[in-house]
Each structure stands twice: as structure tokens, then as C-alpha cells.
Image (cartoon, rainbow, N blue to C red; front, side, top):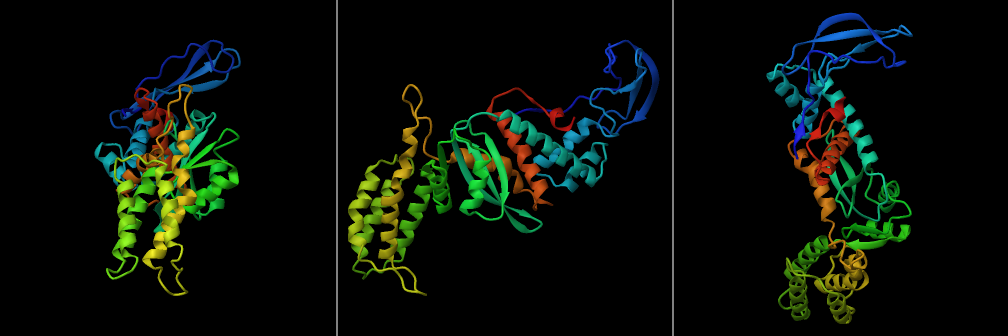
Amino acid sequence: MSLRLPVVQQEPEVPSRSPCCRSGLIRHQRSTRGLTDIRIGEVTVQRYMCKRCRKTFTAHPAGVNRSSVSERVKATAVLLYCLGLSYDSAIIALAALAAPISKGSAYNYVRAAGEAARLLHKKALAGKVRMVGQDTTVFKVKGKKAVASFITDALSGATLAIDLVDDEDAQSLRSCLERVGGADLKLLISDDAGAYRLVAEQMGLEHQLCITHAKKALIRRSKSILGQTPKDSAWRKAIVKDTRWLRKAMAKGKKLTVRLCKRARERLPDYLSAAPPRKGQEATPEYRMRLVLGELVEHGPDLFTYRNFKDSEGRLLLDGTNNACERAIGWCGKIRYRQMRGAKSRRSLKDFLYLNAFLWRHKLTGQGPFQLAALVA
């Protein structure tokens, strides 16, 4: 995605009419003033008087307003912060470009741009949403954990909402989802956390369990179960056979079929005699295998919910994964956040995430170069 910084000129354009009553103008005052900018150090400001009502107003050059700092410098500070630089590093870079600003000013510019991006983002995404993906990730604010909930449009991949929640429970996740979806919302795509399944049930939504998450989790669990099974165990032969089958069914690039649920239903009775652990004891490998097969029988159909959503020509709209949400988390925060030590406040973190979400949406829509003046004007 290409970005364009605001253009800054030294002379203002001559208006043809007054903005108050659309009558003629009289030149009133003309002055010059200093400007903090990468290229221009001084600009001309012209005041005009309305011929009819005698009101005066000021005409500023392009890229200049009442502030002594140009929009180009403001946009550069915001861009450097979005690219992962700290406020200190951003002002050092600007000072090297002969445009020194304070750390507090850089913080204020990012906050203002984040608020503008949030409003523009909300306006651009207004409309009906039928299928969404939801996931959470963790950031740090002053050294403390902050959980962020991301909700994306499963079709376009655009980020719909970013909320900071106190806990990853069903009530918190549902409140985030209710602010995004209305009566048109039909499907929730998520990982295998039980809270999402509960949210889908409470809101009357169909639930799609992310195939990518499910494959990784089941392969990890099957390897762990096999590794903890003693060689002299009476269950070892059955566990070896079933874990091998499970890893083969979940192999990378292999398409899942409903046969997975049927096979789990066939094998589950052999493990029903495995006793649950007593208080203070660890679960036995055979009991853990019983839990895995039981979850496949009960929730396995959620892996194939996406097949119910097709276009007018009968083609699938989704691929069964929550990859759109994962990509949004990476682009909006994680990639650039790795270069940062953390956020100063929850509000600044949210502004940072929404700024990147807005730019990510612009990239997804395939529009031309984005004018950063829209965020700092």
C-alpha cells in the first residue's frame, strides 16, 4: 500500500467568495509566520473581509492551519509511530529532518489521528454483516496485560471492531459482538475456546470452529497423549492406533471430511471405561483420549458449518478458517507492536490499533494511494 504525505505550500489560494454570505472579498491583512516543516520554514497568511457583512477570515496555504506545525510533520509523526517507532524515536527522526517537535506533541497527533481513523473506519464499514470472525490477543500497557478482542468481516477481511476487555469470558466477548452485529448476523468463526461456543449459543448464531486452530490443537494433544502413555500400558496399542489416525486426518493440506466425526463416534466406546482423575491427580492418557474423542463427537460438526454458506451459484463463500481475523491481528498490531515496549495507556493502544486497521482496510479495498491528510487535517 502506498501512502502520500500532505502537500505544504507557502502561498494561500485566493478564494472567489466569502464563506459566510458568498459575497465579494476585500484584502484585509497579509503577514508571514514561521512554520515547523521538513522543507518550508515560513508561509504567508492572508486575511480577507466580507464586503456584505464585514466579517473577516484567514486563508492558510495548503497543509497549514492555525498550528505552527505543518500537516506534513504531523502525518510523518503518525506514520513513524504506526511503523513501530516509539514517540522518542519518532521525534528524533523528525529532528534529523529539521522539523523538531516535542514528545507530547507527537502523542497528541497520534491520539487525534486515531480518533479520526476510528470515525472514518466506522463510517466506511457501515452496512450489513452476516459472517464474522472473532479472536483475542494480548498487549501490554505500562507492563500490565491488556486483552484485545478483534472482530473481522469473514468475507472482506476488514476489521469491524477492536475492544479492550477485562477478561476473555463469554459475557465480555458477547458484548463486543453485539456492538457490531445486528439481526443480519448469522455466523461466528472462532478458535476452540469454550467461551465462543457459549456466545454463539446465547446469540442464536451458527458456529464455525476454525479448521486451522482445530488441526494444530488436535495434533498437539495427540502427540502429548502418546508421549505420556507407558510402553507396558494395556491401552498403548489402541492409543498408538488412534493418535496415528488422528494426526493423519489432521495432516497439513489435507481436507477434513465428516468421516472424522463418524470415526470418533466409533472409537469412543472403547475409552468409556477410562476413569477420570481423582483430586490432585493427573488425567491418564486413556482418559485424555476419551475427552478428545468426546469433543470430536459433540463439537466436530462445527468444523463443517461453513459449508452451509454459499453464493447464488452454489460456490462456498468461506474456507472454514479464521485466517481473516488472524491476518487482521497481525497487520493491525502484532507486526509493529513487536518493535515497541508497550503502550502508555489503553486509549493510546486502541488508537494505534485503529490507525492500522483503517490503513489495512484501505489496502484490502484496492484503492489508490492513501492521503494521510485525512487523518491530521
